[in-house]
Image (cartoon, rainbow, N blue to C red; front, side):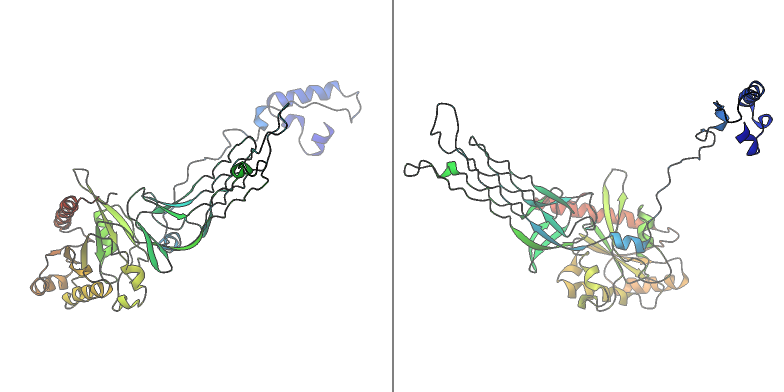
Length: 408
């Protein structure tokens, strides 16, 4: 009581049953020592874990990743050192049993080391989760009683579909299908136990061999985006805005060039549940085939696209020159790349200059020209219908060749 009063908390200030109990204790204990212990039974009003005072704990929404942060997460090249698991040593032992003096050797062989295997997974979209070093699991040592050691488990490394595996500049594997595997490093063979060396000449061999080390390699992984269609154009032509308009992809859009720093893939859904993947390739510049700027890093993602959508800015003077420059860069990078099925998309038709340049563009080019506005959504239906026609043609061609289709 003295401590409560000294702290400025009188018995009358305490609420409810706690105050009444303290007042009764004070009246009954006036003859006691002032330092006698008093047991306080606090009411639930003093609880600090009261549910009414707990903060509102809601699940926080995931923040949208900016283009600069996404560039850190999207990795399309990786140098990996892989080492197979070491084989287990052979066993060295002799059989021991009552009333059997010369039991003979019974050391078993060691287990084989595990492989390091690259496996394509369609859920993976970047090489950012691939570590620079992998080692397979080791095999176990051979035991007595002719027991063989257990083999080391294989180590599977998931990589995106479309990953190229290179060694010394040469392509050794191309993982273009979901579930495709490539053994990057073989595990070492297990050693032989002394039972293996038993012969008529040597009835009690003491020789056993250690396990062999696993294979060691340095590989370069390179990711090429696999999509049905690719949006090709110069910077600030409206490729990202077009992809946002026809799919649920959310690439960055701004009024300056090179807003998109890495490829984005959007899925176009149709009523018959068919899905067409469209890749937004970062803007090209003149001399991209000579690796000017980041030309090679962008052009390699176009190689896997089955058909192309050339996005041209209709508001600039002589927009057909853009188309000629784009085809030249593609053809200089890889022969035949510009000859793939394509369509010319004239963007920004909502501007007055674009309406003047549209008939001039159609006179200069032989391909079909679809004029639209990714900002306002004008004439997007024509593009979606023609995109489906290109996809159906691709499906028929692949089925006639007996090849598997790219599915998303």
